[in-house]
Amino acid sequence: MRGTGKMTTGPVPPPKSILLHEVGLRDGLQMESRVVPFEKKAAWLSSLLDSGMDIIQVGSFVHPVKVPQMADTDELFRRFTAEKKSKTLLSGLVLNEKGLERGLACGVEMFCMGASASETHSRKNTGMGTDEALTRIIAAAKAALAAGKKVQVSVQSAFGCGFEGPVQEERVLKMVRAYLEAGLVNISLADTAGHASPAQVERLFSAVFALNAGADCACHFHNTYGLGMANMFAAMRAGVNSFETSFAGLGGCPFTRVAAGNVASEDFVHALQLDGRRKDISLDRLLEVARDAAALFGRDMQGFVYKTGPVRAKSAV
Image 1 (cartoon, rainbow, N blue to C red):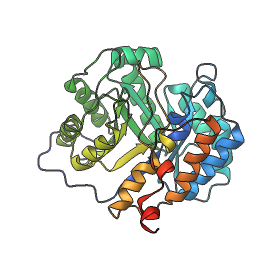
Image 2: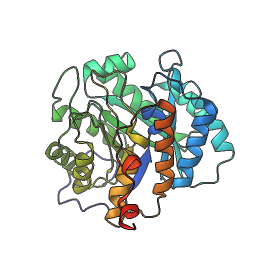
Image 3: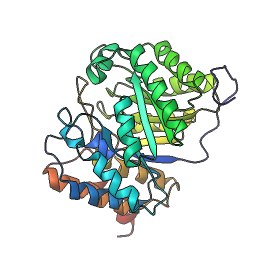
């Protein structure tokens, strides 16, 4: 049953629907030393909304001194929730109760919050150990649900840690059980350090579904060792239906040892569309944003399709 930590058995069918969660404005930009002007972010957000992505993460509610790139998150939410016509959900990342208060005040529609399975990463990221962070996140998640908001909770460093190395899978599953027992069934496993492999991804997500076949699972992979796309499809085979990506492949956690970008949104959408999926998404819009980001930062991005063009364009020649 949903919302319990009880074991359920039986194979998990492939996802009937695929949800696309664009995290470039948050995870993509938090590592960039050049602060992107507010109006440029607003232009990118408008284009991303036009692309038809299901969820867009507008920013995070962190201290502006620690992460200056996120200083205008509240303002972005206020502008776009006030005039929003799209069905796309606008999500925001919070790390603590203060972040939740800010998010509720400016109109966040979906709260993303989590704790790290790595004690070292947890302390570097939040100043708290894993157990304390988990307890506080669960309380904050319940408060957000009580306020009528959608909530996704995550286990960060679920597949390994840049500081500690391998993370025991039972440690990850213990955190998942705590979420399920609290009635939190929208759960993301995040590969913060980019250490995941496809076999590990299938095994760990299968274990989560064994705890609760009705869990709504999401995945978040960094492309540190070039396995991001392979891990996305491994998660899909395990039954995951929500995928977090970043335009142009931007991204990286500033509190891990080796920071690397995410799977590029336009690359993943391109791959899906080659299989006949999610043709409702405007790949052209995503490519425009990726190319504009490359121009702004003056370097090649980690994505591929923004440089090569999509297969459909090449085959039409």
